[in-house]
Image 1 (tube, rainbow, N blue to C red):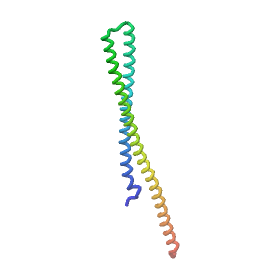
Image 2: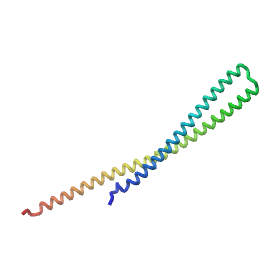
Image 3: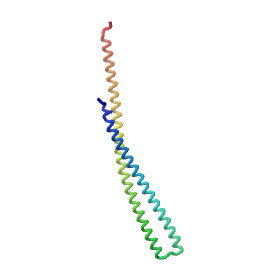
Image 4: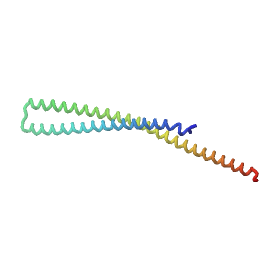
Length: 148
């Protein structure tokens, strides 16, 4: 019959597998968040550069049609920036949720590992006691047997 610590090992392995899956999902979510942040930085830099160009051109004189195009384009950029900020907020929420899942699964894996270690120590102690008891019984039999 298998020891209790050995019977729990498959459960620990399954928990470790679930933990690894959660870590992989969290890693992907963090990469997605980083991508969204980089895209926002690019949009903000582009908006700043475009605004500087238009300010420079505006000081030289600009037509009303060109000014309307500029304003429409800036509104589009501002909307894209707002959308990107919303994507970042969503991605941060996903990361928080996935981090909580990973922490829960990590805790379970860790707890199972500690339980197995305790069981193994307990089983080893029991095995040593059993061996000692058998050795004591054998020693007692040897002393009780008459020598020829």
